[in-house]
Each structure stands twice: as structure tokens, then as C-alpha cells.
Length: 109
Length: 113
Image (tube, rainbow over all chains, first blue to last red; front, side, top):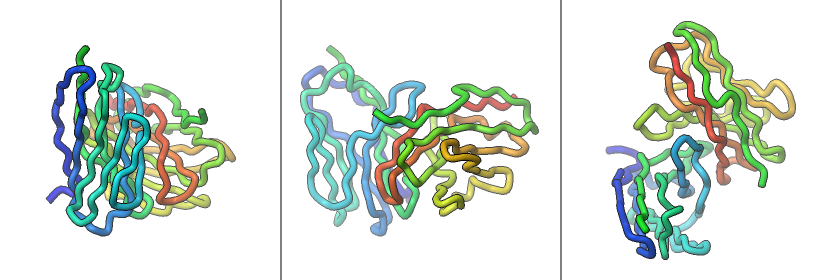
């Protein structure tokens, strides 16, 4: 079983749609949860982070963690063409991050 | 906004040669990391570094790899004798403390010929 699993997509949605991106993980000892956005030929850019189960909102983005189900989600409201990128979930354990494979998102006008 | 900077953006090296990748972490950060991403694959942890020593390393980080903070601003990754399979994007990251959000640079693309 992989430590972190993420649907690779690609996901193609119209502008204004609500996008749901998801990851599952296997180890209940994992401690903290992050979402990164990665544009082509760029490094991962931190979007959201959280340490506990529940929801955390920042503008159009909501991160959701369910530790009992080992499931994390990122919701993007009112998606824009500029949101087109690869979205990476990353789960923290001690000092390291364990990344999912990334979901490629395309938002078309 | 403060950012992590990496140089060079692209490094081409002959197999068997030594290569040094350089990073300038965010100035008030105390924890430093290296990750790599082979083309089409996920980002993988290599090593974390705090207080001038390695705090954690992965199985990938074998004797061919080393890290150093030679002065107050730079953080380097050295690969002693490069192999074809070392070709990848190498990302440096930093954080204020352990288990805090890590901020990444834009990476160095390493191509081994």
C-alpha cells in the first residue's frame, strides 16, 4: 500500500466550477497536512496547511482533513483559468514531507 | 515576500563527475531540506538539516550525497560521482522549525550525460 495516494487526473473543469482534490494516506502516525500548487518548471508553492481534523478556509480554498478516515481534500471555489496547475498533497511525518503524485487541473474559460 | 533561491537553474554534467547544487534558504529559517523529482514522478524527500547536522535522511541519500551549510546563507547538496539515474529536478526547501510549513525554491534541473 502506498503511503500517500492521489488521483493523478487530469481534471478539466469550466471557469467558476467547484473543484475537489483528494488524497488518502496509510499511516495514522502522520502528523501534518499541506497542499502545494506547482506550475510547469517551477517549485511547489504552499497553498494551505493544517495540523488537525476539520476544515480550514483561506479565500477560495478550503482544506479538509479527516484523520479517522485518513483522507484529506482541497476544495477550490469559483475556479479560475489561473488555477490551472498540478496540485500536490503532502503529509508531514517528523521532519519530512511525503508527497502524493499530484493532480493536474485544467480550468477552461 | 522572502523566497528560497536555487542556482543554477539547469546543470549538465558528465556521468561520474561531482556536482554541487546551491540554495539560499529564507533568512530566518532554521531547518533546511532537499527533495528530488524524477521526470513524471512524485517529489521525494532526500534529507533534512538542522543545527549544522543531518536530522533525517531517506534511503536515496546514500554515501554519494552530502549536504553542507558552508556559511550563514548557503545550503548545498553535493553528489560525488553522478549516475544517469541522478537526473532529476532537485528542490531545496526551508522552514522556521521542524514540522512547520516548508517553502520551496524553483529547483535545479540536473541532467547527467
